[in-house]
Length: 422
Length: 169
Image (cartoon, rainbow over the protein chains, first blue to last red):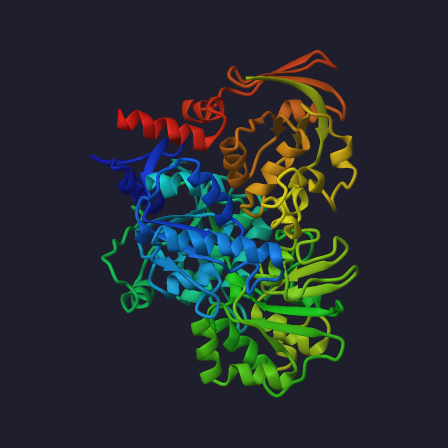
């Protein structure tokens, strides 16, 4: 009889050519996709070229998305992007995306149907764990890991223990995936799932939208996790069916699979959550955060750049004005999200309110461009990190929240609940 | 692999934005050495001038959490750090350090008892650590063979090159 296994263990075993794997085991696994961006790929490319191979393991299974400092903010960033572009041409990389057609990588890959359930994906970006929302094993790695995978199509892993989270109860209005994951990180801490798989389950999750699931899986790394994963269900299949261009496999966890720990989380009565600087675990309900004055709002990022996020922000901002002291920057996650948002009139809502709307970019999230903060400035952002100096000056501050809270805060000039406006 | 150097001590949950702020992520290409000068640029501005080649970084829990930027591990190496000892490492940072041939050893007891400037010795293969200043000895347990082999080869690229060449023969 085979061992009872979790979804994470089954995907890893399938890619290592093994019947079963156990937590702690070191395996060499085949990867379905290798991802890099304009920050991490240039170094990976230089390391890869030291191997002198002249080809990548499979040009169709490499994805390059120059999304961080693009459209290029300065000459060095332009040169880094060019290095990636030249490599993509020379090596015939199928999935290279150019400014105007691209998106923030973790919004773009699911939208393009490049990641599917049952896949094993590595990306030289910590938020690669986002694709766990699709029932894939996806994890962030560094540039040298990427270089090795470009050459071999393989990577070594330590099979993680799994921490199972069971959410129950109905969500209140204006509460979604972002709040669930912030609340969870507040509960278990920024290393609460270090080296582990986070498996998100429970009745609340089965009713959660795909964008809500992406937001949760996206921030698994903020709890130290190797991957965050959801068991694929009807919502997953509905999402991937119209996008998939190749077959995929639905894995599930056995009922009696072994978990390092199972934590039940009661979400009844949960308010929108706000993570105070300088740590994503520094979480408070929005009612406590109300009143903190702000200078900037950023709505977007790989955590909250989905169409559903813009709909929620627009619902709050419709007919309102951005507070005179505040700059509000809206960054749709992909070019397609931007076009849909225009068709639905959402972009009009933002522009009429006095917000700035940008082409997709990671930009301000990591203090790159398009909204860097000055000394003493404070932002509410739908991004994923609020570390010291993350969005700019070392004495600036970032408060993390969901898109509706960010929109309400933009209008009122202070951290605010959407219920104050709608 | 043995290292001997002075402890440079940091606390818990030091993130990669603190180790190397995002604004320096385009610098490595023009001037790789500059990464060392920018190491802890905001968090501890005096760091790069205080470090002597061979010093050992000593840190608390979850060192290197956050972004996957390999430049953070490279910045520590460029600053002169020879070896890392922490209570624990965030996983992507751990991989990055090993992949560039920078040993990252978990040893909570040593970290708890070490103070800034203590003379330390780390024997990576055996997983043995000594605080020469206090005379205390510690065991960290050995790395898995694959990790040791990557370190012995000086990093993942050399390791992969050796494997590819072996496969050709």
